[in-house]
Amino acid sequence: MRNYLDVLAKVEECGTKAWLVGDTVRMIQMGLQPEVITLAISSNDLYKVALALGTGTVDARGPYPALRGELFGVPFRAFGLRRPTIEEDLACRDLSIEAIAIRSDGGIVDPFGGRFDIRNRVIRLTGDNFELIHEDPLRILRILRFSAELEMDIFWKTASDVREYLEEHADSMAKIPAERWGREIMKGIVHHPYTFIRLCDNFHLIPFFLKELEELKNTDGLYEHVIRVLENIEKKIETHKIMQTNAFVLAGLFCNIGTKTLDGNDRTKFTDRLVNECLTRWNVSSETIEEVIAIINMYTHFYEPISEQRFCKGVLDHSEEAIEVALEFALCVAEADGVVEKYSDVLEDNTWNLKQVLRRFNNVRLQTEGATRYMTGREIMSLLHLKPGRRVGELLEGLDMAVGTGKINSRAGAEAWLKAQ
Image (cartoon, rainbow, N blue to C red; front, side):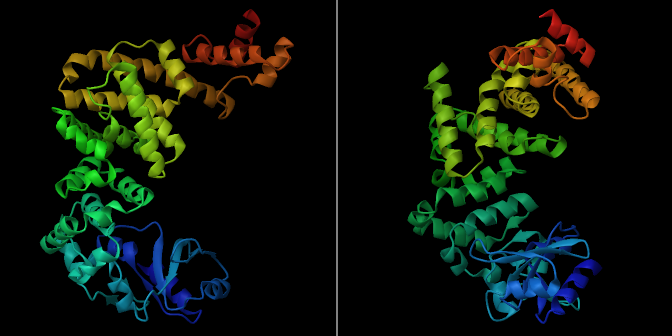
């Protein structure tokens, strides 16, 4: 903790008191290493502090401007106190485990028993203050998110207060903007999708942010299937490195929406539209939305043999990561359906074929210092004396397919292949 205290001391040399607060203190108390430290300072003139420190920039966006910088090799973000004293400032924080501060002398300010709650692994409203929920009802989702993320129980009184609020103020929950729901939902599901969604269901929150998922309860087995898929996804995230985690978990959340009352293209169009509309409202990036739709539309194809050529086309049309994630997703769904044994041979063969295609594309990068092709369009035009146009694009696509299927494994082979065309 020495570096952290050095940062506090350096900030206080600027004539302002400083404390470690929030997630930084909570992580230190849990024996974890914060990547960025969070400070509260008594001065509200962040520009003056930045000038005195000789480092950092002020981000004035949002309700609480922040000074962001680095001291002693440690990234930090500093906020001015929201109340006259540190104790009053901590009282504004929603959870007791986040309402702890550390002074520059190493002393701890813990007026609401946050360290006790950390030791006992419980999530509790700061000071058991019910008004904190009235001030911002979305704190309910933060309570559930922290419970899932930190694997902590929700304190009985906090749980009771949340249920009471939801019974009496459903209209207030319904008025929360979709993008705020989306921000908390994405934080909640990214690592613990099954645990988080089960908590949301337990507190009857799902109708507020994804009524189509709640409606699956009216169709035999579909809602339970989503839950099983999310459970498998959560296990997969714990044991595997998933490149596109956001798309992976969102595909699980939306995979059964577009119920069995719709078939074929109608179901696909309905699901694609719903995913796009909902995730756009949640302020999810367009790239992630496209990946989610691709995974949902592709995964069922992996239950039949797929040639290297088809895998190659899939990689070129989407991305290596999207195809890999779709294949992992297919396995999660097969496990949820109880048909892993039925499709195990096919899935293993497909996994092998995909690995061969990806290995060949990776060999290109190794030989070309990171380039995705042996030759560029400009080089093809020079080699074959072509003008820019459609034919160059066709040759580039054909060259990629030849690499992915193992027909070409060097620049010389690429030139020979092109001349043969």
